[in-house]
Image (tube, rainbow, N blue to C red; front, side, top):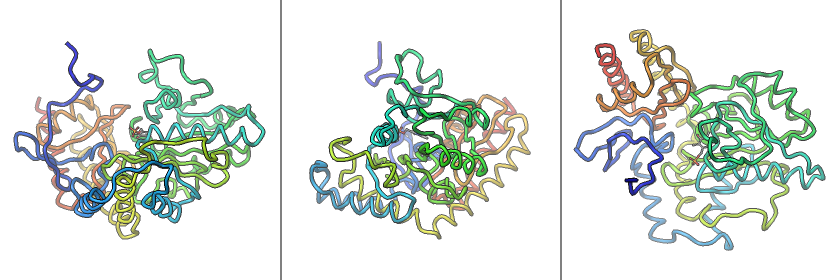
Length: 391
Ligand SMILES: *Cc1c(COP(=O)(O)O)cnc(C)c1O
């Protein structure tokens, strides 16, 4: 018999009742060190006092009003985002997938309004993940996500990872945009080198193609900069954000330049829930914390301590791990054993990690992970690896 919850997840037999910082308490009272943070969502850990305060204060005042009215909390957060980024304008969604939908629509509308309606094609990359709507799965194009869900939205081309010549050849007079994650998350923590992002920006500039960056997973301070593309010294035309932006409250956003957004006039797009007062109040508190230079420096310091420890872990468990990859607190351990076995061994040691493609174990901890948490993470991962070696 089918479960009451649609069984689209292979769930671990764990349920949590309480969280505090990087720690989760399970139903049986056991405490787990959370290095997954709800897949990079709980950017400030669980039950951060400032977020709890903002959420409860706003909850007493106003949760939801329609976007047919002005929403001051939304205007505040949009202003904060445009002040801190390349963007001139922001649309709020409830998820990364919805951000992908708008990014695709915005790019196509841009060319339509420019009098080049034939420029509809979007170039994406193998191993990408942009969400689960029909548009977002067409963009990612991986067999696992699209099989059985056809016919897919047309107009997407998928290129091999790192094939610069193929990219140059693929951009034609029909190309509207290129969509790429600066660091692939689900794809296995694969970094697009700064040089390649620069080259891609140049290529887009010389052909007029819009550059859409998907920073749903790698953005919001995770790499030690507010957004990952800042390391390469480039800016996109359109950017998708979600996951960490609400610190655990559902929130997403599309950020864009005035030019890229120029086709999106009144009536062309909307959302019932997107940008509601509750989500935006929480988002503003998250952003005010994670965009502080001192906070971002601390992310980098914590990240180097964790990374150094992980390098040691790889060296001392060569039959379990192969290498460390990633940037900041978006880290991956390429595994020799099946990554799902390592995740399970972690459960036994009460440490939570997340599997990704390419046999990678992902570590996406809260950005305010403490020094003690880092030491404890390394100790527990070491114990998990030792248990696997002895099995
Ligand atoms: C998670 C993710 C999405 C989809 O976000 P949802 O909130 O799950 O819809 C899109 N792109 C990237 C890079 C992601 O990691």
